[in-house]
Length: 316
Length: 152
Image (cartoon, rainbow over all chains, first blue to last red; front, side, top):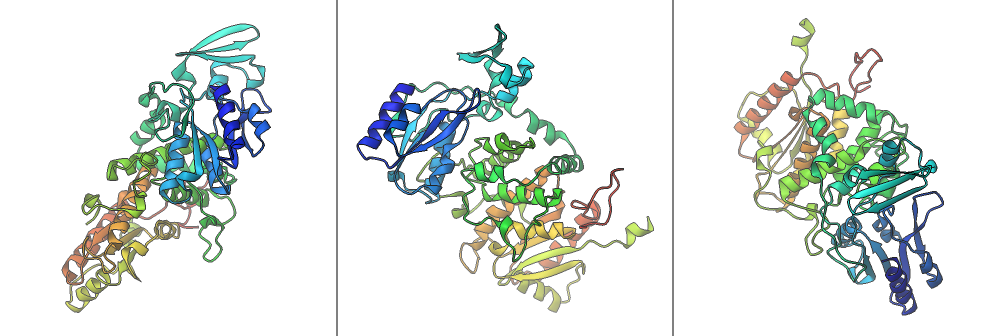
């Protein structure tokens, strides 16, 4: 798969079909991959595909001028489609190099399972439904659904629907919705006041670094409402009230664009369970309007469209 | 408990200029009784009401927010209230998930000829707010778990 990607990427640049290639190269730390954005055909030799290509590369598309060849997992492809729906990018300017994705390995989960820091691990390899972690020469086996990201366990589209070049054979989706939705289900059982208190505690940790916003392909505003000063919607000091308002509005803004790629939660430096917010909004949009973002490039964006009769039970 | 009975909820109403605001006027001119808890803001259309305005109102200590516009299909701008409906629906559901009592964000369709309905809606919403009590969502918590003044 990697070889094919390198050949195709090189050919795209050589034949001048694209100006840029966006993909992954090995990261500077163990078990990591770093986004690679290049115009140089020799750089394509560094492109990789492995279970650690976690970033949603669609995030870079809105900042790049020219035609782009982009490596896309299922979730990335949905974000790309969502950007096309919003007229942020043109389909013809993007060459989608589709990666059939069997799920991404969450290093935090591996660390917890192995009881070791990622630096102390010698190897992590996946074979079908088993993940083998080698520590000090000893092999430990774990079931795949213990090691994948929560959002991967809820994946609806492992292989991109919309692509130009398919790298490898599409595999079956392996959804483990129950495991993935555990945190949300637990929270929903709690009383409203308890839920509010939970979020209050979570967001008192928030340092408003905006990593969630910056990593989110659906968050593409040139100027974010938090930076507006007239009126000043949220105070610059990261107090929990304003942190929470920021996140509420962010989720409302990306409703119908969020594809549940889980990037917000992954990048959060203080481990706020942001995906449970995003996932809930994803569910609300689906439940009320039967809308799934990034599935159909011809569909109108959620907020640019309406039905004659919907959601009436919420209105007096 | 004496304080409880004195407390009156503050309700912020965003009323559409073409229907609900006129409906509120009609309620007044036809001498319908409704609680004085509502502070009305005239907006050009219910779709003018950004979710930010709703949340900012709660942040500033309003006990509830009512958004009211023309009936679906009757929008002065043809499609404004359909768009408002989508936006308010997701805002309402999302706030509920976070733990905001559903009574705090209410929406209704009131036409210019429905003075009576306006009075009913405001009465009902105010009653709901009295049941859920003062808005302390954004009030600062002390370490012992007690709350200080709302909106501080």
